[in-house]
Amino acid sequence: MPKTPAAEVDAGGRAVRVSSPDRVIYEATDSTPEVTKLMVAEYFASVDDGLMRALRDRPTALERWTSGVREGMRLATGPQDKDADAFYQKRVPKGAPDYLETVQVTFPSGRTADEICPTEIAVPVWCAHMGTLVFHPWPVRRADVDHPDELRIDLDPQPGTTFADAVRVAGVARELLEELGITGYPKTSGNRGVHVFVRIKPEWEFTDLRHAAIGFGRELARRDDGVTVEWWKEERGARIFVDFNQNNRDRTIASAYSLRPLPGAPVSTPMTWDELAGVTDPGDYNLFTVPDRVAGGDPWAGIDDAAHSLEPLLRLWEELPGGELNFPPDYPKMPGEPPRVQPSKKVESHWDAEGNRIDGG
Image 1: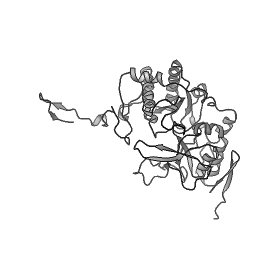
Image 2: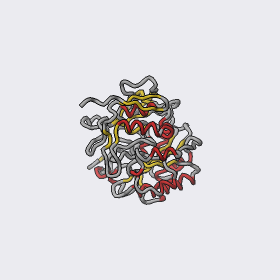
Image 3: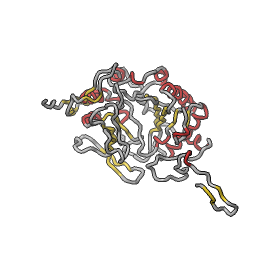
Image 4: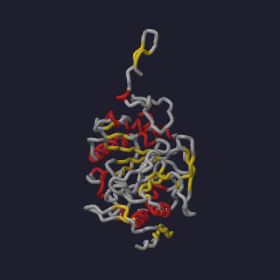
């Protein structure tokens, strides 16, 4: 069959070419029709204001599903996943248009890269042409890529818990933030979790941001026994995990208004707190329903109005017991970090009177 000609999408007044516009990215479900590549590009153009509020001037990695989303397809998470169907793009793809701007970032390894830095809606629309569904912006602006301006609280359901549990815990998080004089902005993850974003003054390092997330998570766990900050999965139980490590350098969360690679083309959707409390199925917020919702106003329109201090959260980190926690396995060993040994694999060591180890360890 002849190849379908490329289409054009109006993205903020700029015409963006989209090749293979009729390629099916999401198959039809019982509640949603199929979604083509052109529809993905048009969706990003339609949520211009909210999406750019999330991405503007931020180094942004792309999650590219160039063949679409099908059951059994996998996302590559490391060099071992050579046969995966989708991948993260951290460096600027070849063939980028001249209006696409970049910024250099430094990874934990010390290596550097030029990442996409969206400044206009035409950039995400072009990324859709490249098969992008999810945008992963850093919590920094390009004017200062070493000092975050955003704290991200990731409420991640563990086996035995549900989206409803994440929503309930988000309510506890709201109360805690309000007590601390901090305004949080919640959104669905687009899957089972809930994210809460907080704008902060860009005066702290990434290690401080992570410690603030740990402090917040520990206080949340103190107030609600359905919450945990345990890094090792075997210790989390059926609780909501506060994934503090999402606040590390080069760790990102799906942006507001990103699509997710799940049936029905769900969207990571900004909410008011009261709206979130009433959501039972996050899949109701998808490529087909979110544009009309955004046309009525973005719940996160005021997110840039105030930037908060991290000090109240850093006090929690300093005052609550527990100390440092583990970093992700691809990170270099960090100061004060506990041994990277799964608890069930630890072997107790015994010592003689002279201080010599006599077994285990």
